[in-house]
Image 1 (cartoon, rainbow, N blue to C red):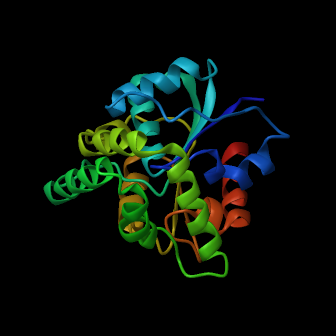
Image 2: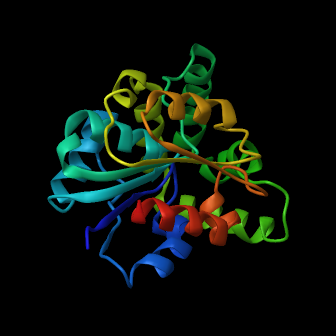
Image 3: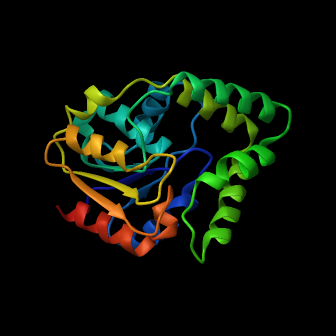
Length: 230
């Protein structure tokens, strides 16, 4: 069975995919890349490729999806199938780059928890009974990764290239998935990704925001299972 590589989003670790690991690890090997030391998306993609199996299924959420798109630009022959979750193929606009600089300055002053609490976590999730538990997990993941990772990942996102041309070269079975209430990477981003990847499948998860893997794990797993069997 082809291994599955799962790339988490910004300031998340493998716990972002805990329900998926539980669901699929009995079927195939699961590979979770380390956060990486590079300060460019090209560098992070190269680090993932250096550690990944020779050929693999690839799923990335948010920043993980951005890295996955770069992997498709660098080594499309190694990817059996592709899933892009709650992500964005475009580079940061100027106002977002300026905001990242401000956040980097705050985090370098020791304000990681405050930035996560006040500026990032409120945008992550739809309303639901598990919201507070998942937000607490997001904070735990961010604090475990630490300030240096926040700064590196912010620099990667700030300088990332446009991946729209890469999307048009994708020829493997592809799932494009997002939470219906994702405000960070909303539906229109995924409509665009879907339109650029020939024969891709678009799946919208009701009752989820930016982290459907945790907010609606059963619906997300069902979509991923269908993708893995396509």
